[in-house]
Image: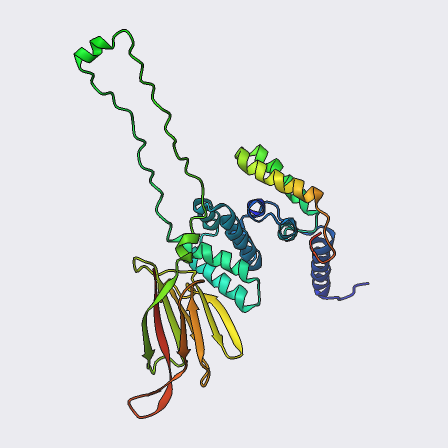
Length: 275
Length: 70
């Protein structure tokens, strides 16, 4: 008997083999990752790792350790990634306190405060004694014993807090009419006392029936201290930069006109400087 | 990192929630594993003590019904 079954039995074997392989690898003996490098984690787990690094940094103020933890990801711009994660967290209704920790680390990542340099401890200098006095005092010269000088032991401090806690002043406020910008934007730039852009600065915007909270640093290609907000026409906004800064009121989408007489909504550019 | 954050915050429920992200084991298992690993790899005494403090806090912690961590 010679049945001509063709080659279909090969295909059947492949299908059965695949099915068994899937069954084994997914249910019977699934892969378990042990000691996986943070860089190989899923994006959600990487976010969690960064958040833990930010929370640990907030607790211990050890920027070097936080930087080492984030460098594991081989990220070209960790500060940007942290800032973007903070923004995402706020946009998704996450905990503002957690977003704040991320933004704090984003702000400090590239702007470490200078190390505290302690003044040298004064030393006791021997004063030459005139010979005659030395002779007079030969029998009963009280020995000069150096008095212990109190020294200061530098302690680890939450070095980042003073940077962002100082209030911000409005330095520049101007209407922006630029047809190339298709949305009516509130553009904010925050700089420190030396004029350097400052990421991770909290920006709070309020209007008649709402408010929004975000941080500078989401667009580091524009500037690390830049943030913007899309305004709706006919709504008046108030804005405050930092936690104790000046509140700027009367911000609204401004009517502008292009070269051909067509009108469009313009925005505002606000520059804030730290005191 | 979780232990360091706990040292600053003192909130054991938050620490448990963060550790729960690691898997379905009892959260203190992860801390004990980390302490063991740290001891084997010459971590600083301060780090080990920080983790130990968290482990002890978790051992004494009784989760409330509204605290989701296991």
